[in-house]
Image 1 (cartoon, protein in one colour):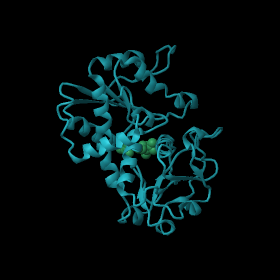
Image 2 (cartoon, protein in one colour):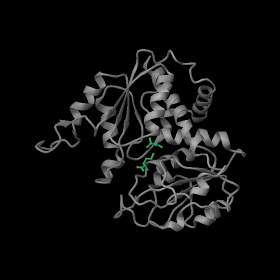
Image 3 (cartoon, protein in one colour):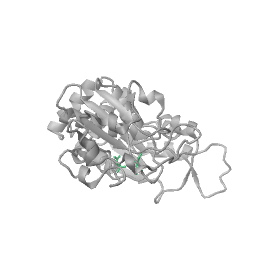
Length: 318
Ligand code: AN0
Ligand code: CP
């Protein structure tokens, strides 16, 4: 595998899952694979899980890691071509990217949607420039439209906890005070579409996602109806995708918060969220602290998804 930006890059998904479970059995069995190889992790946005789990995954494989927070201590980067650079940005991404490529073997990039220009976001302008100009394999640590390391960890978690071959998985929108990208829900939907699970998406009107990601999911506007019989409840907020509200919070309806009453409609479902989560906006204290909440094992699987992806990229380097 060269680059990793979406589920298709893994090739055979069932095979990739097998590899992930092999790694989970003994995460140090490939500790020679990354010897003398350097991973550079570039963050344009904050992170707790991705930063730690990906670095840990790289260490398990024997790699060295360098972490760069672009907005803290590096030169501010201009990303547009043709700009007269007389403002506050002393360096252009088009020099910075190939320079970064000189110091590493693999690059991970976190670059959220900016909500300034929908086409730029949905064309993955920043991530694709890294792929084009770095000369290195590049993987997404959440880009503008997808968060594949998260979705892979989510899938591993569902595979571990499911009690039936074809569980009912419900992704529900939930309220949040700030505009959040569609990357997590887009990506989760893309990965669920790559399985044979029953997959339902529920959200208030106006929060329709890009149909390309919705795929064959059932969209149900009545949250309670959607949750009936669910085996997994995957909560997430996202800002509007459809024009003219792209990137906007159009409501903060706390009737959509996942609480005990709603979980009671499910088939004793497990509760999932990618974290970070705002309690009592997205989910109540009671639900996230309940035995059915698997948010911590879900986060723990980020190490496994990252290690599986890094292993496949390292194998491709040889
Ligand atoms: C980000 C998001 O919703 O995309 C990252 C989640 C992994 N969340 C926040 O910015 C709070
Ligand atoms: N879930 C996730 O990607 O978390 P971070 O933003 O903390 O990396």
